[in-house]
Image 1 (cartoon, protein in one colour):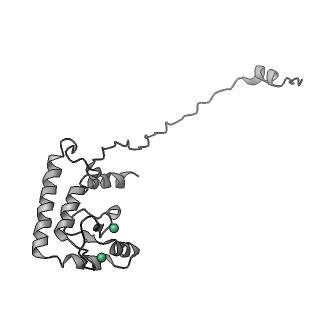
Image 2 (cartoon, rainbow, N blue to C red):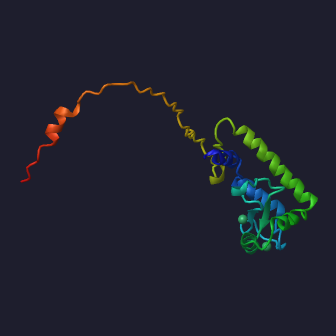
Image 3 (tube, rainbow, N blue to C red):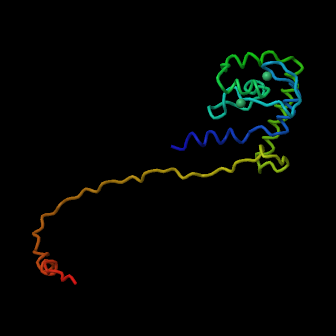
Length: 172
Ligand SMILES: [Zn+2]
Ligand SMILES: [Zn+2]
């Protein structure tokens, strides 16, 4: 029931920080779909394969820099994931090298941060979601005891009770 949730959790820990995204956008410097050169404050990023569908944060293979207009198009289904990936192939060697450097730093960070949270980076993207231990809802094994019904001669247990029940209640 909760298995899929736990798998997602692992991925979320390595979420991109705003600093990494800034570096990423600076390295690319334009919308990778329409090619418009824009300041990083305007540029957006888009996960080609959505994270909620198992897409990774890998800047080289799954994240594309886009302008607002192209981002909307990407979400409206105007481009297929395959088409979006084609845009990634247009990156220059220089840009790829820069992105690789960001990826390397990122992986180092996540290794360091493994021991105890990542306090240094004060942005919201780096907040590690604490592991929530969800108790597995295991149904206790209930072994049905064998009930052997002994033969009992049932005495007239109800004899006395019947009389009381049988009394008519007075209504006010
Ligand atoms: Zn664009
Ligand atoms: Zn998007």
